[in-house]
Length: 400
Image 1 (cartoon, rainbow, N blue to C red):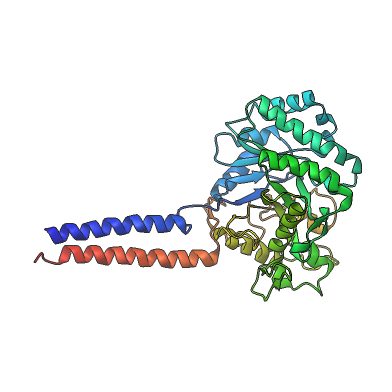
Image 2: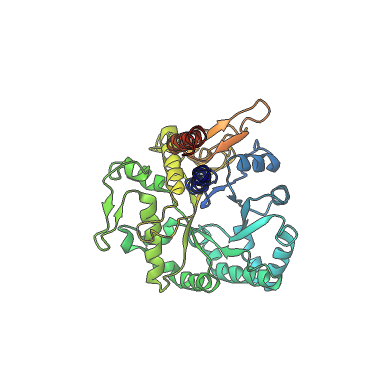
């Protein structure tokens, strides 16, 4: 009897370890640092309620929208999806008035929070490099006033305020240790970084290795920008090794921020992606490359990776974009960044596995990449076999 109890205890301990292992390696969880950009520049996109169903099926719990669409804010209430909302660039001048900022927050945020999990407000988008240079003078006052309005309403503890920036804000980005902001934005940038430091808010960067490759396909190895196996590059000053361009771009931003005297500000990727289709002069815009880029980001996110400069800080990444948006202006690529078509079918396979049913085409989708799923499934099978054999041994052997 003592031997029987001992072996039952062994099974119990193993099951606890197995469940812990499963949770840590993705069997029972999604990717906590991955988000998606949900654009709405299309005339054939699904209703917000259907978009929420898609995100839930994908196990995605973070999304960013480019406005404060009340339909989306209402549809996403009482869900576990965290939302970053956006103040449009044309509103910045108005929000330099503190009372207008308070009115904006009272109208666009307070009625929906906390039922809708608004965790961030993007004040403008790529303001530092916008063609309308007058916007830059409005940015910091608008950011400060929005944050102050949140504080007045007791929401500043829950909602961060920042602004997404184009990589073009850098004067130098290669090697990463040479990262430097353009001199023409340095004055406002210093004020903005002071705000981020004081409020412990992140610096958001829109980083697209695709653009660098498209402009210089003969000089930049495709495998390096697609996260495929390659020799990479070593920063000659830090001696850090980079096997992909995205991490190098992020670290260049970190160095640029440090040159301004700030070392603790977290850098997050507010947009990154790859188009699946482009015009004849848009080199590299193919389904194969788009699938490879996004699939490999998913795999890196599964490993909770940081950059070489900050290896222990998980890099938060928001993919661009959820859908192909047919009304976006510009070259063909602009309308083909989506992981999904407007009917919620996959634009291409990035390693998402779906269990379809006639009523819900994307009923159950896991974010685990195909390669990782194969490994996980194999590991799970071995674990189950071990439990079975151990249990079998317990009950067929006689007590001595």
